[in-house]
Amino acid sequence: MKQLIVFLLCYTCFSTSITVAQVPQMVYKTDNYWQQQANYTMEIDMDVTSYQFEGQQNIVYTNNSPDVLNKVFYHLYFNAFQPGSDMDIRAQTISDPSRRLSHNTGTKEDPVYESKIAGLQPDEIGYIKVKSLLQNGKSVNYKVEGTLLEVQLNQAIQPGEQVNFDMVFTGQVPIQIRRSGRNNKEGVALSMAQWYPKLAEYDEEGWHAYSYIAREFYSVWGNYDVKITIDKDYTIGGTGYLQNPETIGHGYAQKTVKTEGEKLTWHFIAPNIHDFTWAADPNYKHDTLQVENGPLLHFFYKNTMSEEQLKNWKELQPKAANLMTYFSNLIGPYPYKQYSIIQAGDSGMEYGMCTFIRGEVELESMLRSTVSHEMAHTWFQFLLASNEAKHEWMDEGFATYAEYKAMDVFYDENKLNPWEKSYNRYIELAQSGLEQPLTTYADRYELNRSYSTAAYHKGCVFLAQLGYIIGEHNLDKTIKTYYNEFVFKHPKPLDIIRTAEKVSGIELDWYLIDFAQTTNTIDYAVKSINKNEVILERIGKMAMPLDIQVTYTDGATEDFYIPLREMLGDKPTSATILKDWTWVLPTYSFETSKKIRSVQIDSSGLMADVNSKNNRLSLK
Image 1 (cartoon, helix red, strand yellow):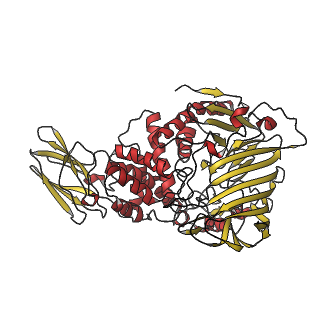
Image 2 (image 1 turned 60 degrees about the vertical axis):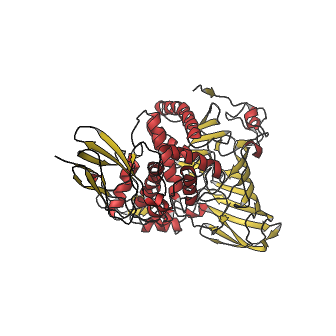
Image 3 (image 1 turned 90 degrees about the vertical axis):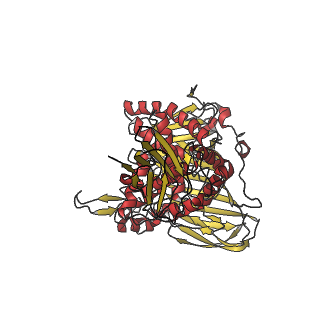
């Protein structure tokens, strides 16, 4: 693929001609679907010495629901970074605390964990303080409960009504601990994620006003118009299209306007998103790279790193462009005109039109473990905006699926099962007795490691194993159809299943129920072979269709396919299709035309059988 490296961004790429109309429009309401809309206009003034900022915010909120709303909720995420917060208490009480939120003051053999948040001093904590809030120009009553602002409305918002909320607020950026914050381990000054008062989402299930504990987010779609005033030596990268590059310079354009004073105001517009994130540092190097038939990529990284690390960032750029093209082909076209990869945050985390990643790591680690995963999140959560606080596996797991598939192609590995790592991690959890169903809320897992394995790896297996059930071609088509039907919406687990049903013609409600809503496991065995008869046994509670390979005594092989009756259909296959097997029957038998030497269940490894040792039987 021909690549064009652009070191000086022309003015036309960021002119105010960039509008909402340049990306596909969101569907806020149809006969069968509705979602709320929140359009933000914000101005903040950042003091880079005190790490405090003053802000003004206007939200035009449209109630597309059929319900009357008597109150609204805002998230005040920065309030989590205070001693005694829910995030702090959770870090102190969970038995396997995150190393990001806690540090070990004991030994490796006898660890003693202490919350990092508990030790923050007043000038190190994070906060958002609301100074005033108006509904259509009139003051409203509100109260703060940790990371939530509950607003009692003067007048209820009627179905179809549009209202204005105007807020004046102040904030303090915390010491960098989790995702957001100042002065991270690599010296980035400001990592500004979830930094503003953010309206909670309301959908057919009601308000999703979660306390911020550690994990995921769920936000309202809308358009953002944001002005950030900051020290003139700082470069900003993040969400949105810069509207005044000729004033800013900083690698965005040749600066033509003389700076008055010590600060610059950066003006961004971001259409059709549900989050606005940015990072800033006085030592950022800014590169750009145009993806052929795709967006302009921006790279922001510290120019104070070693020569080797700076070289890694240069070499990363064309690889990131290839990834953008690969994911657009795999899932659906990236609809925005830019995407930024930014050295910031505490590791890797996805945001609207950008990602934060670590910068001082090996190139392969940057690409394989971080950029590939975080870029995949652009589709699985930032375009297909599932509620990741409730269905965390739909974004983490699906992004992991796409990440591993991409890396198998990029490194020319051609694995029979590119997702083998996820299968192994899931099976290990399933056998541990510590598994909780995927219906568990992200913050409610008893163990951090159980959450990670379930969300990332079982979620990945859910999608990869769906390909085993309906066929790889049907899965590829399902993913593209899912994108086309639910881009800029809030899809739920049933939506991916119903999409797969429509594509494949196979009933799949049983799969969603057993694999996502329970901890039932899959375990099949070859019970016995008697000349040309095979007897199979279902040991696990979860039933599945089976791919069987039989090797005959003459060395020939034959493939068989046993449908699951509950599927009411078959996947495309060249194998010999046998009668179906219903989940209530513990055993199943069939006969072959020749004498058998061995039988193998699922030679691909794409069925998540928790005990593969009994999947093969050979006669001596």
